[in-house]
Image (cartoon, rainbow, N blue to C red; front, side, top):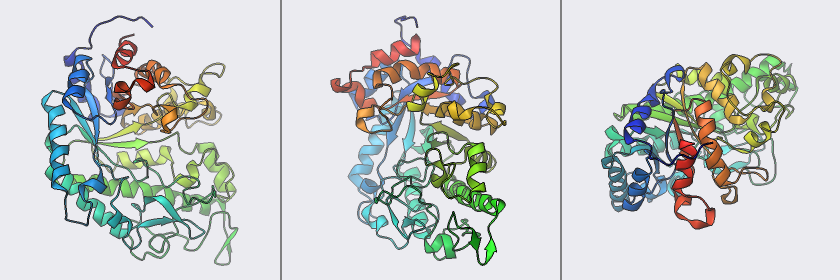
Length: 438
């Protein structure tokens, strides 16, 4: 890459960002992505630094447990005022703001609600994420919080608001070992709400095969077929889309009209693996990386959401993650997005298992005609999604802009803004600028 030293014009940043709400085929302005940071503080110093380097987009995180710490309806007014002031400071400086509502940080009183936990087939509750998918009590508390955010913050000026169901704020059920006892094949749909419909959230559907546990060969005295297992998985994975749509609808009902970002981790279940898994009645066969239990079926889910939500943008959280490192070691390399990927990604014989997470998930967003933004995992040592073979943060910053351009992402948000101001991580905004302009 060349290392030209010049500022990215603010007008260019603004021009590109308007593409956020456009369908995937039209989501990329000719100039390329807009650039910014995850988890911005929006302090005076960070605002000045971001503007000086032409970084025009910031994600600002709210915290549900700090917003409503005591019980429903009792707001921490000092926290809300500070959050509003920081967001307004960024907006007034000309920065575009994506709001992370912090649904993954529920207050203790929400955790204590009846039916608030995901439960697996062994009756074990998840230790982290709350049941935002099936639980009516959690859904009601969550809806109330989202409506308060829209009312209390300058939401008409906010570019996008994130939604999600997991303890990481992304789409998905809890992952492997989230019962905390080392078990890696949990299915998180065995609460009374999910199985019997007791306390079921509005719009959610209970199990089509109550009492059946994946892997069992019979149900109610009948042989379970691969088709029945596939139908069960479709119910399981589409329960996530129902929950995501409920969050989207709550924001719209509160008057929010901007874009909605859906963080999507990894590549999800590959089509061939899903066929293998359902043929084995979901006994764990074909589960390459835990995506089955997490319910991540992007080829289906993105298409469903594209038809039922407005201004939805997929946030691909694996830009230059560990799978990109492995994919570019292939011969030929399999990390870079290609024009034919949307069709090839679901065609028999395509070696999508060798593709990077970003490449496959981006192809699914394009197939659904959804716009896409992206972010890198962040420093591996900070346990934000790294592996033993991940790129360092410096290498992620150097490589991620190229992936963002090649995959036609509307925005690249580097994780995290605070790494730029801490010498321990060995990166600066100048490194980001050089990578962007290279």
